[in-house]
Each structure stands twice: as C-alpha cells, then as structure tokens.
Image (cartoon, rainbow, N blue to C red; front, side):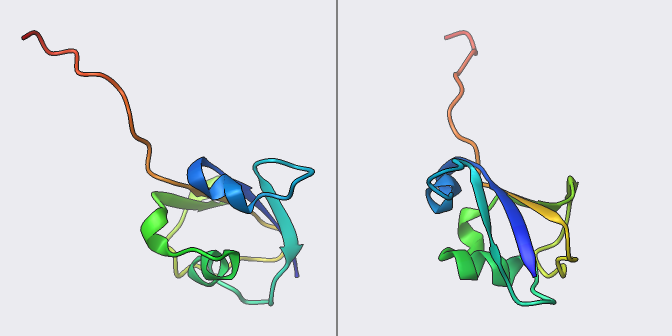
Length: 84
C-alpha cells in the first residue's frame, strides 16, 4: 500500500530529497507503526510520538490504507528562567 509519512526532528533525514519532511513509499499491507520505523531504518528509541491522521497512537497500531503517519522526535532546548 502507498503511504505518506511526515517526519520531524532528526527523522527528517529519511525524507525524500524533493519533499523535505515527507517520506512517501510502498509498504506492506497491515504494517504497524513500529514496523514502519524499522523499515525507515531507525528504532522506537528515537521517537517521542507517532500519530495516524493527527491522532497519537500506540506503536503497535496497524496503519490503515490511505492514512498519513506523523513521526516526532523528542524536543530539546529551552532556557532556564529561574532567578539565581
């Protein structure tokens, strides 16, 4: 089945060159999110969250045909605003 995956953070390295932040490709029917990230070449340790059609889902969730998957890495940074 054809799948569109939106990639954020360090996962953008798996983007198609013509469409930064997106990966599009053929995946086996019945694939789940965990299997998808393995197919991309990474592990669940790099993920903060995964969503199917905008709804955060467990990694074991099967991806339905025609869905858009979003993969997000942990965010870092910020500043310490406490008084010293």
